[in-house]
Amino acid sequence: MKINQDILHKYTAGQCSAEEKLWVEKWLENDSWDSIDENKAVAEEIGQTIWEKVSSDTNKTKRISWLRVAAAASIVFLLGFSFFYFEYDALDAQSFANESMDQTKFFTEEHYDVLLSGNSNASIDLIHNKLIFSGDFIIKPKRDFTLLDTEDNTLIFKAGREYFISDSPDFGRIVVFQKSDLAFLPFNMQLKIEEQFRSI
Amino acid sequence: MRRLILLLYSISTFLFSCNPTVEKNIDPNFVLCLFNKDESPTSFLLVERLDEDENASVQIPLSTARIREREYIQKNGFFYRLSNSTSVFTKYQLRGSSLVLLDSLHLRNPNVETVSWKDDENLLAVCREDIAEQKSQARVYQINVKEMKIVREDTIILPHATDEFWALHVGLVDFEKDDLWLAYSFFKSKGKYGYTTSDTTYYATINYDSFQLKTIQKETRSTYPGGFNLIQSYSFKDEKGDYYFMTNPGIALGNNVKLPTAIFRKKKGQHLVDQEYMINISASIGNHAYGMWYVGDSKAVIRNEQKQLYTDFSDFHSVYQFEYRLVDLKTGVIEKIDFPLDKGTQKENVWSDDHYIYAAIDDANDEHRVWKYNLHTKEVSKGIELPNTTNYTVRLDYLK
Image 1 (cartoon, rainbow over the protein chains, first blue to last red):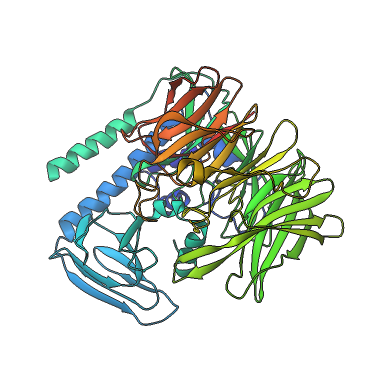
Image 2 (cartoon, chains in turn orange, purple):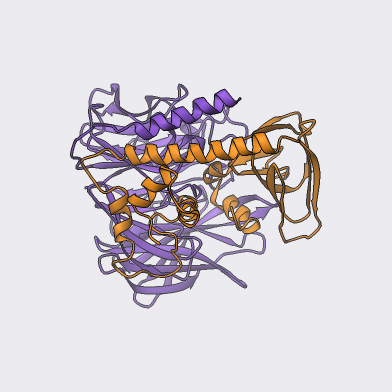
């Protein structure tokens, strides 16, 4: 299935099938500029139509599709938010541990997903808004919340985003980076974070 | 809360119904790469001019995978990009306001450290290879981008790794008189994420036909030559063909902060770096800098940090600290350009013509704008304003 303007229009109008919806969301998440699958060298014609169609008409500002994608994203967010707000309002306190030295461990919970790096643990208390942890982890909130860490920093988490959290002495203090901010770290640090968390 | 959600739904509906009526053909001369707020997809903003707000523009969303999004090579409207997940090197062309995938090929390496153009069609790309014990191994590709073919690829072990500093950084590549020239240094890991670079730089001259090392020149005046020039520029050739480059030992790159950021020179036709020439930027301004752009007439722009304004790695990118300065390459005199303070580590955001230096700046008022510096009058003035959805303007490329 190719991503084209028709599918994006259907997506923004909420008329996509479940498969199409999944496809568009994968496309938006993908690091490729052109297609879902960049795993192999492409034939000349493959992908040519994608951006041509997505941003087809030079007579129009592309903010149109931009707005639509943004609007679509906001609706998906709102649907998700309202779903979680109304259906899963019960807050909880959970503890996670990964005793492996070199393997990550994934936990999916009602209010967030957590990926612990090796030799790390985290206690996330949404009732009292406390975070106690050791090591490194990635958290992907499914709702907005704030947590107070052991250094009295108030950490703000937004639904749908990804955060890298570390108390490594290499940073000198507890650090929280949104995924996008990792792009500004020195390349060697980025590589080491990527080596640990293949999914980042 | 229900009312709030209803309101937000209404806003979304309004957004759907918005149908901007800008009906203007666009022939873009520049593309700006924008990291947008709220984790919105990275986007390209195509504009015809940098100095007028009444300017047709088009914005193309790219993807939300932000980490490698700005690492591309742009030349004459063609874009080249290496996927770090698949090692596929792709070529795109900007046609009007569409980004069209033209071709791709597969490399052995997922990351390129530095590139330069051997000629208009041939790209030299250098990767470091961490293969078993060969930690100081570099792989050089010559790619004909017109035909999208690997013309040649070779591997070379670069000497002088030590037991302590064994990890290779190749920061610069140049081609001069049929020889390949590489500048490199070694670094070591410190803890889980930390690292530091040794206090020595090496310049290697390699016979390109035989791919044998000819000479190694040792440099102790500074370290961490060049850097990832897919992200930011660290070298150029002037009108005479003299090659200038900078070293980057500050925390954003080399992390050996006691050594100075400096500009060095290799004269046209020479393989040895001029030992009589050094502009010590750190000594002049008291800070490290990253990024250097030639503006003509023996002058270059640099972008410097301010160590009193940031804490460490965690806020280095988000603090409004970066200044711009004009360096006279003949005299070493450095003048501050009175642009607003900028944020964002390593940005490729400077372009110049005969009259102006243009810099795309994200300032403390959350204003995202191209600023202009008149090279003759030294006056600073405003250029185009960028969308307020922008968080960081990470690149500004001329397309023609």
